[in-house]
Length: 243
Image (cartoon, rainbow, N blue to C red; front, side, top):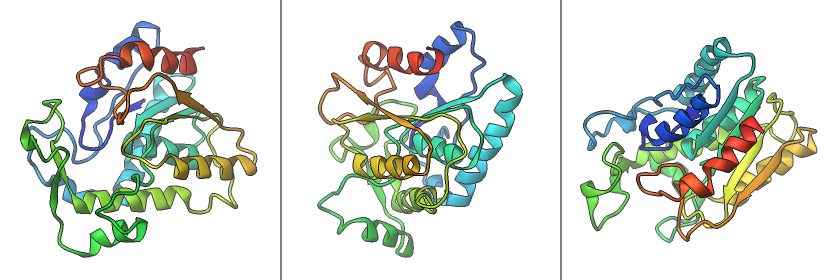
């Protein structure tokens, strides 16, 4: 199972998915709710909820169990958070969250995590990923911006993933957390803290740090915007899953 990132769609993982299929895997690339709509300027992400994300991940896992003897899930950003939810709640054979979105990096326009959570209590605003080019941002199949209520829900989803981590061992059998030190979107410290907490409870999970990444790079999957993914990232992900 390959879970795409926030505001993207299954096309993001198309090339990697074909690579896994060519090597004998059954591959499922589901569309996260409210993503991948034809109208790139839609505000439908305003309707995204934590419970919807949890239900989507669990239903997807239930479907995937019928496709093979073992189930591995990889996901980027929001997709990585979905994979962490599966590691926490389901007996998945292998979870590979890539730059998972639990909290974004500190940003001058926020006062920190509490302010992010407060976004849900005020009218939603629409923010462009790149204010300079707005709707012209690439790739053409991803949304060029997002409503702030959706970001708040992602933060609440991260809270749900981390909840109870200090007292409960996750159910996933194996997990490799893939991080990028050059990431300009998510706070790796939060992910590492969760990993350390789970491991103190006997999870035995490990971390893989990507090397050779360019500065300010969060999407390390989509070859449309990051062609180097084919040589810098794909071989490592294939090795993690297939050995």
